[in-house]
Amino acid sequence: MALERSVTCPRCEEEQSFYRTAAMTLHLGEKQKWRCPDCEYGFVAINGIDTLPA
Image (tube, rainbow, N blue to C red; front, top):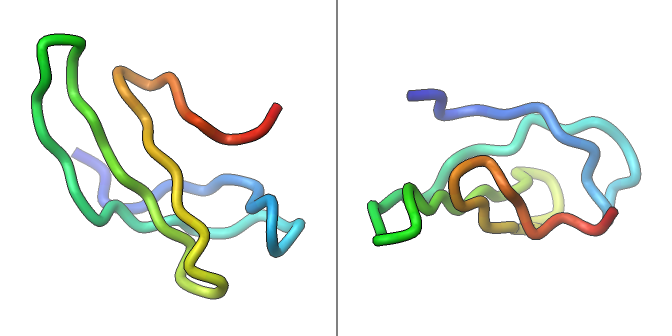
């Protein structure tokens, strides 16, 4: 289980290493919360589908 994920941050507008802050299993699959260490922007991913802007 990865605790770090490289993603383009919408606030920083550059590639950042997001850190997993929480995870739990739901009936839909695994829910994970991720947070940018620089600007505190966060997003949720359920079974690999995230809430980041397209």
